[in-house]
Length: 157
Image 1 (cartoon, rainbow, N blue to C red):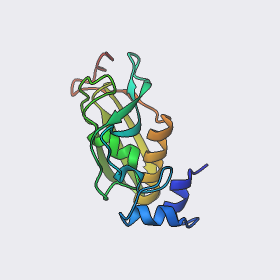
Image 2 (image 1 turned 45 degrees about the horizontal axis):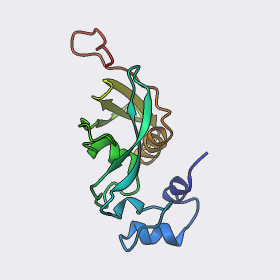
Image 3 (image 1 turned 90 degrees about the vertical axis):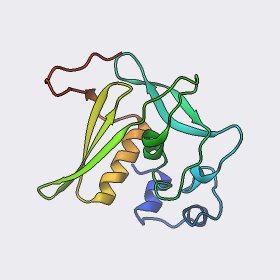
Image 4 (image 1 turned 30 degrees about the horizontal axis):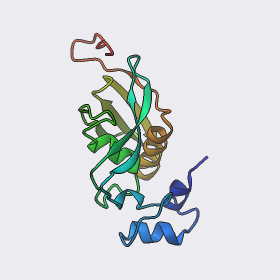
């Protein structure tokens, strides 16, 4: 089931508050463009710090403000740019590699904090990014231990 933001992005519904957020006019809680709002206390973020077994725990916060390019994908933006956890410990930013294999779009997400990796597939780049956003937001990606060049999985710490 799609979230409100994803339904608006997919063109399944229209929302004036999301429209204002996408245009950068004003961000409203629960609508597109919400991450554009900066405050002294920071922006509440959705990503969770991976635990010792590679799973997620605890929510995040940050003091930065997103631009408009990834405003429609706030959790992906957090994954790629967040540099600190709520406990003020340093966080290494994630990476995403987009590629096409046959007629499918694919994304490889690497989280060096795990260290872990996940792959997502979509029929086009739009559905792929929506799937990545939904998977990160719900913490439902199929994360696997990242394997360095030697082929042995790295120990999750």
